Length: 464
Image 1: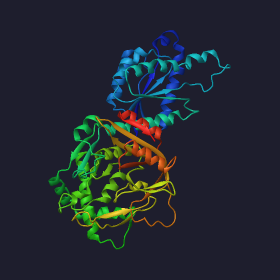
Image 2: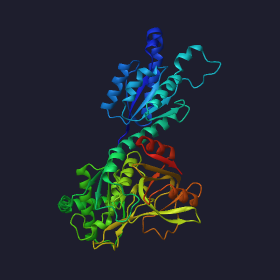
Image 3: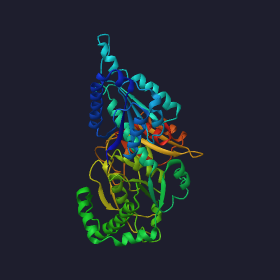
Image 4: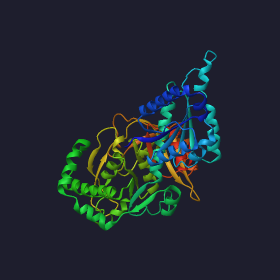
């Protein structure tokens, strides 16, 4: 997971350099201080020189484009006439995050008059934002003192979501098999995905897939087994041939993901039918390992949810594909599960690796690793297709409940999401707004952050 890259654009006015050059040392010092604060938030900061004129702004934006920044952060060091920066910002190809801050924490009646020239950037922000709004630019505003508020943390969160949005809008999502026949909620035509979301669906080449699987060596499988000894609690009755055939298929899928440069993939488990050498068994374990390694996944041929998981994993390792299965009315939660796929990063302990009875096709039994999902604050996210190329991101805050004691559902993928405000109301609102049956659980995230993601992707959003 790479650090998020931002371009810091410090704005100033040439008039002050001509008439009050003595201000620049203090102006430059504050600029450096902000750079340090942003770097302290684990952002990779590419800053331009202080910009005052149209040419300087244009040069800065062009440099940020070459650096492939995920977002531009503006910093008004004083008033800056908006028409100087308008053209450059109009051409910016990434979200613009406005850091609305000043050096002084307190500016009351005891303040020295000289401090006015160092602390009046906010009306430059207002001038610029009016033009951003009029030009239909995507931007967010974050106001506060860098040492006495959470403004840097909020900028960091928004910048991370800008990175996730960029990854989502350029996603290459592999698909093995066809979308599950009859499941209509998540199915979107390839052209609509490409034109409206930016997602490219990459179809699995069965012949090449069979070659990759056939080329997996026993040495590679043995090395994988040695690693798995540290990751899993392995069923003592698990036959090595069952492990080997699952690992061989999984490693072949891993090579496919690498060779195609995929950010995510999806598999319809029914594609294992017919003893096809391109998918001889359902590689449940590899689907889970992929998510733990930052590659998105969703089941049953759901390309858009797989792309969403991959994008959100770029900023947070504790993201998993899941489904709402059974309501627990008594405890106000819903049982989350799937056939065998979840991100091992969210396991509450070592997953139990065992053989799975596979009755859905004539394929041989695969391995699967079960665990209970860990407890913690989380949001449930869903990407719902609507009419006419529109997509809606549904977001619900809640918690994954911690499970202690006996768990009779332990030999399955299992966890319980408790939504804020009550289960019944949540389920009503979720289905009223067209939520699909595939979900994403994001630990430690906020609805506000997912709102930034949706805005930067051009998605409609409802926080339930």
